[in-house]
Length: 409
Ligand SMILES: *[C@@H]1O[C@H](CO)[C@@H](O)[C@H](O)[C@H]1NC(C)=O
Ligand SMILES: *[C@@H]1O[C@H](CO)[C@@H](O)[C@H](O)[C@H]1NC(C)=O
Ligand SMILES: *[C@@H]1O[C@H](CO)[C@@H](O)[C@H](O)[C@H]1NC(C)=O
Ligand SMILES: *[C@@H]1O[C@H](CO)[C@@H](O)[C@H](O)[C@H]1NC(C)=O
Ligand SMILES: *[C@@H]1O[C@H](CO)[C@@H](O)[C@H](O)[C@H]1NC(C)=O
Ligand SMILES: *[C@@H]1O[C@H](CO)[C@@H](O)[C@H](O)[C@H]1NC(C)=O
Ligand SMILES: *[C@@H]1O[C@H](CO)[C@@H](O)[C@H](O)[C@H]1NC(C)=O
Ligand SMILES: *[C@@H]1O[C@H](CO)[C@@H](O)[C@H](O)[C@H]1NC(C)=O
Ligand SMILES: *[C@@H]1O[C@H](CO)[C@@H](O)[C@H](O)[C@H]1NC(C)=O
Image (cartoon, rainbow, N blue to C red; front, side, top):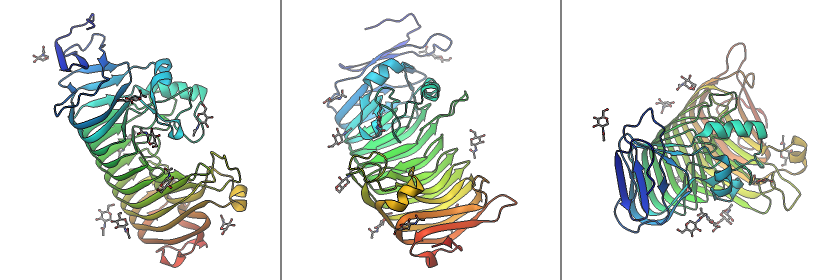
């Protein structure tokens, strides 16, 4: 056991393989402890209990997978060390868009709660990212400069994550991968930069290859998607979110990788307050690409049966947006339209104000191949004066089912 030159007042030994040094009442002194996580105990007992006014500085990867019937109480703080060299080399790779994570949590029937905080120490990462720009292609990280995700739920079947704060995330706050039946409730996410560097790519949630995922009753202050439904997100409910400063509730991006099939199906996103955001209800799909090895468009698949219901938008650049030529040149889309189809999409009761970023354009539904069965009811969004609301459509076959006058086809 490591004894530290600080006022250690508690020691919790939650299991033989987990050592947690508790540092109660040491405000003012250097907070420093080590968590050695590794072998997940296979029992019904809480394996990690971080309680009270404690702060744990975590300097090694948390790889806690294949757990079963485990409760995790987190009511203190976990803070990851701001050690870019260590984490870039050692954070757990998740392959998709070069994402990596500080903590991979997985298993069946997990319950993580307690009102505590996971602090990703993001500022140093945002500053480094701003100066080296090493992002990879449309992803959160590169292979050499990973910006790990503070909490990833992977290969998990049945999990409830509730009453937590996740702050200062280097990139995405939450990632759900290869999982089913995962629910988040009462989560506060906050990543706000105190320098001129943006808190870049700080998505609230990214869902990937997962089915039956629910996110509800949460507050998000960030600088990228509030929620992002990535390839193969099915049966998703997002309900009662307050998103501030984000890039919207997004389906996608999809169709990025040639040879891959991306599906997003059966989605309800409802009761959303979206303030000071780049987008509101958004679908983003790459254009086509003739290269069989493209990593910037050319994938196939579909987006189907998605409802965006009850949105209050305030100062949002693109309140309603379909972009089926995402990060693709218009000339490329004209020659190679997206092969990923979009249909059965419904906007209901979307009201509020746009920013002046797109002048008067408050709705933009632009498909690079025909999009079918897109409907809108109760859409009332006003741009700031002197602009008048404009609605732009391309390749929307159900233009008569939109309750606003869409220019184009
Ligand atoms: C921590 O400080 C609080 C008040 O500041 C005190 O009530 C409590 O007993 C202290 N805890 C320990 C473990 O010393
Ligand atoms: C995480 O732990 C599991 C065993 O629990 C192991 O199979 C896997 O290789 C580990 N992953 C990494 C990235 O260390
Ligand atoms: C991953 O990072 C490498 C650079 O390290 C980059 O070439 C590649 O495009 C990135 N992949 C994705 C999917 O972003
Ligand atoms: C997700 O599934 C893929 C394909 O089976 C696998 O290669 C990858 O390791 C899995 N990742 C996680 C985090 O479960
Ligand atoms: C949104 O965030 C900004 C800056 O972080 C803050 O000034 C503002 O009060 C927040 N607005 C809402 C509605 O939470
Ligand atoms: C998505 O699911 C479909 C159907 O199961 C599968 O063919 C495809 O490979 C999956 N795509 C990804 C990116 O996992
Ligand atoms: C469409 O998705 C919703 C979930 O948002 C689901 O309840 C409904 O059953 C789906 N419709 C069909 C025809 O699958
Ligand atoms: C429309 O959405 C707002 C929230 O933005 C909600 O307060 C209102 O009740 C909804 N209207 C209807 C008719 O459901
Ligand atoms: C509309 O779709 C056709 C293919 O059906 C495509 O050639 C055209 O470029 C699309 N229009 C726009 C504005 O993207």
